[in-house]
Structure formats: C-alpha cells, structure tokens
Image (cartoon, rainbow, N blue to C red; front, side, top):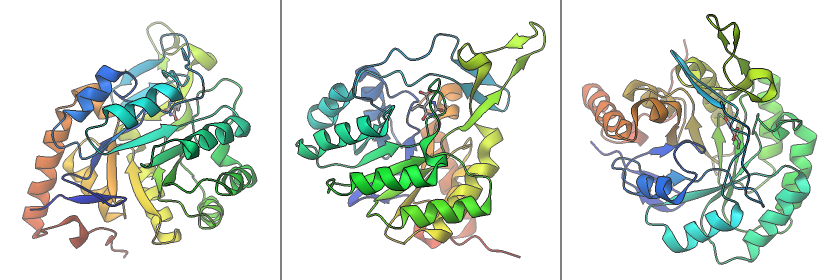
Length: 308
Ligand SMILES: C=Cc1c(C(=O)O)[nH]c(=O)[nH]c1=O
C-alpha cells in the first residue's frame, strides 16, 4: 500500500497535512510538525505583515462534535515565518499568508516575490474572525481584483485558502474566477464562519470575541467540506490541485476526501483533540481501507466518487 502524494513536485510519504492555524504558530510547534510521522507536509499559521496578539481568550472551545474558534489571526509575523521556511524547514512546508486589506496582501506578496523563498505559498482569503473584516472570498469581484493584481507580478507557486460555499451558483462563480489564474492549488474548506455555541449551565457564549460568534471545525463540517472538495474539483482546471480540509477524524474521512477529488488532506480540530499522534492512526486506518478495497495507490480511487 503506497500513500505517497505529490506536493507541487515534492513527493510526500503521506497525503496528510495539518490545517493552518493548528499547532503551527511558534517555532516549537513547527518543529513538532517537522518531527511528526505520517504528516507528509506542513502548513504555517497564516502570517500577516505585522505580528498579532489575536483576539482575547477564551478563543477556542472544544465541542462534542467539533470545535469553535475566534483566534483572531494571532501570529508571529510574516518575517518570522519567512525565516522559518528559508532557514529551518526540514519537511515540505506551505507558507500560509493573510492580510487585513488587499493593499497589505500586495505588499506582503511583493516582498515574498523579491525574497529567496521559492516554495509553495497559500493566500488565506477566508479568515472569519477578524472583527469588522469580511471573508474576502465571499466577494467574487474583490477576489478577482486581488488575484489579478497579485498575478501581475507574482511568479512563484501560489494557492488560496477558501471559505466553504453553500450554493451551487457560488461554486460556479468562484471557480470561474480561480480558473483565470495560474494557481497551484485551492485549499478547501476553512472553518464554517460565524457559528455560535451556547453553554446551557452558564447561559452564555463560550468564546469572547464577536459576542461568541466563531469558525466551526471538526466532524460537524465534514459534509460541507466534502461538497466543496467535490464541487471545486469538478469545476477547476486540472492544473489546480485541491487540498481537502475539514471534518477529518478517521481514515474513512481521509478516504472520502480523496474519493471526492482531494490531492492532499489536512486535519485541524482532531489534532486539538487527539494530539499529533492522530496522523499515525489516520495513515494506518487509510491503509487498512485501501487494502480491504484492493487499492494500491491514492490515484487508484482519487476523484472516482460514483453518482447514482
Ligand atoms: C487566519 C485566521 C483564521 C482563524 C483565526 O485566526 O481566527 N480561524 C479560522 O478558523 N480560520 C482562519 O482562517
């Protein structure tokens, strides 16, 4: 059984990654990822031009069937993560970047274009937890404008992190925009934005920022994640890879993401619940499913979801 996968020309021993934001903010956390078996590649916490504290605590809450977070984009700043991927990287790494404005995104990517970094970058267009800021990728015209300007100068490998869409016309619209650009990949989904959890005993919300509204992850988002992976795979040019993120807690979930078309699969909430050992479990479970079904490689079943 062969779990190898390709990350923009780099061969990975496993198709599994961490979801940006989970266990990837500090040097210690990034080094943990580098030393995690069955984690084929890793993604940094989305970096902004300036370091950020993020939202006040409580800002992450574990739920029976997932998680809710309003972290607020805490990160050590773009310079730290650029230095990490240039100097410290030992495992294939995707540099995730974010911006609070289109202007900041352009500034950051112009600097990255001028830097020695030649590796993959992921532009996060979907952070749901910046007070007062919309999730850019829900504005199709704005997304088109930003990507048009970015690709007027950026020539290195670049993908985007997308929010979940919930309307087939929206899948058509975002795919029509993305297919205009030489993107390496889309990573779908980010958390389902602006969910709300209620603590019945205390009769109050469980996270502080935005009155308790936050991004949802974990088991509860799996059907939405699978739909977005499938819909975008069906609509995007073959040259654009799909990284499936959302709701993975078992080898079956990894299998489902790949069956829907995912080239690679990221895991977030379940790492928060189970720790980095989850990757060994998921790899073993996936291999057992493949053996049971007579599949040797991921390509044997990738994208082959049958309809009725
Ligand atoms: C980059 C900010 C994000 C955050 C955050 O830092 O609040 N949480 C998410 O679920 N997704 C994000 O994209």
